[in-house]
Image 1 (cartoon, rainbow, N blue to C red):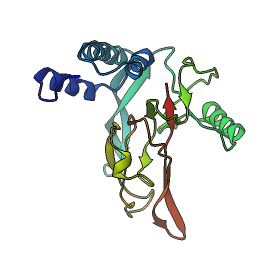
Image 2 (tube, rainbow, N blue to C red):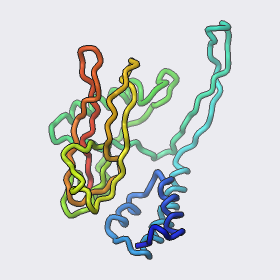
Image 3 (cartoon, helix red, strand yellow):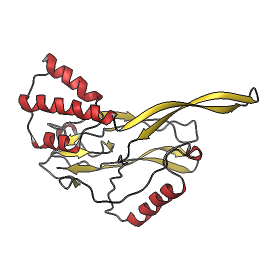
Length: 231
């Protein structure tokens, strides 16, 4: 398509990096087409439209509330961010049940929806959701890796079992994951992995559950197995 030295190409790439939402039909067209200059221009324009549409799906605000100061033994102002989603906006779980566990997963989701919610500050009413079950509205998408097709990575995935010779012609980004083990001052072992949104056509990367440290007598792991879908 366009040369990387082209000013318009670089401008469009910077725009795309800022977009966090694409309609499925837009993504599907990208998978089905080549990278001709004419198609790239059309795709950039459509991607920008999708990015603007995403901003209208929710509203954010900062709310002031009263809190108790332990130092002064009195009320002090405290501010927290709130996000409100429009009616019809869903949080989707894409889950692979090849090894069973579907019934247990449904029980866990039901409990979260009925008793508490998702995320933090549940005692203040945040994270409350209503659950609905329905078939995926996009039949063109198939879970799993299919050779000679464009496969989209929806999770982080470790680099285990892959060499530089397997990456020729693939589109990917690497990210370093690290941080602290929960409820401790101990750092996790850092690990480089493929970022969500990477696209492979040849090598069926599977990833692995990666040990990142220990806490007392227990090992601590990070799930870096690949979750692929293809069109």
